[in-house]
Image (cartoon, rainbow over all chains, first blue to last red; front, side, top):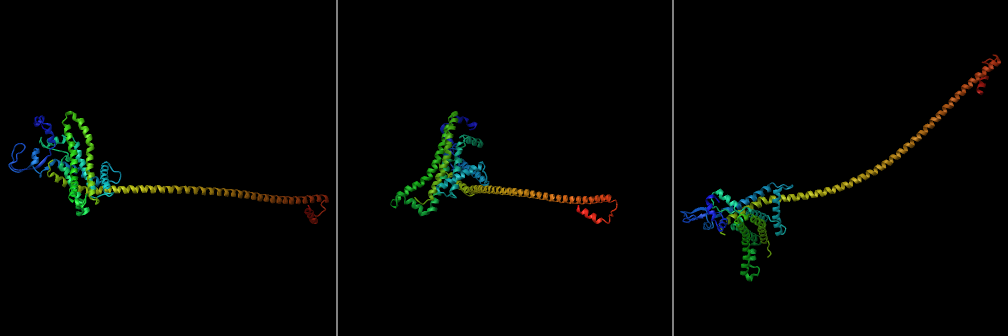
Length: 295
Length: 156
């Protein structure tokens, strides 16, 4: 934080610190007559950055978490650029370091898909699995960057000491639900494509109790179906949010935070790839189930 | 947990990067991996073939070596036989040559002896004639008694 707000920083409570760190940088529209965080009143509708959590909420649905979106797309660009570069310069001889890593990841995704799809690879699901794994892994890894480093840097660069800046996109439910709802749509798409609309609806309505218990079947199967994207998104979000929160709590310990950060980072080192792996595996399994007509 | 358009943005981004990955990244890498797999398999097969050929060649070379040894053995025996023959032949030749030289020498000696005897006979005749001349005191006409003298010298 800059010098002017040093006094304010002294009185900064733990709650305020946490709240500040857990608030996304939101860009959206505030209506005319809206009273801003600093007390000023808007004369007309304005597209602007939210200066408080309340403003962010009041911007409604058509607002954007600039930081989540930016980091998400930035990390995805790193992923596709690295992979594209390797893909274009594939050598058949002894692969170099980067090519090795890329090949391991590709084969890992391919093997995982083959295991679920009875030995066959899938031209769409396999790259999907690779994209999910690498992308989520990169996003989760942002959690290992010291919690105040990038926000402080952004505050210095923008000159706004109150800038909200979250660097771990997977601690934003919008991002995790973005993934899981896409996967959910794919589940429905492949279910209908493979089994036909009738087959898909029949699967929902006629199991597990037979046609005389149709409403109960619909409720049970509907919940099962809907629980998939929700559990996918919440699992990832919950793990990473909790991890981030713990880093923030440790960051308030003064000098004792250093060993604390280390210990938690070591634990978190397990969580980061594990969550990416779980998300990828469950996506493959759900899509594999969508490809199987047996119930 | 407030949802906003980031959700839709993320879904669009996900779709775009998935498309990019499945069209421009995945097939290339998988193709590369497959190509390498076939290349390694080919290499292994070639190595195995080479090994097999090496074995065959080893067998062939030992066969040839064996054959060569056998052949050289027969050559050596043949040569030995031939050498023995040549030695025998040479011995025979030498013996024959010696005999020939010996016979020639004997013939020559005979001839010499004959000639010596002839000369001796003539000298004896002359000597006898001279003796008879001495005895008969020039009474004897050499031309008249030539027949007699010749008969005497032939009787020697």
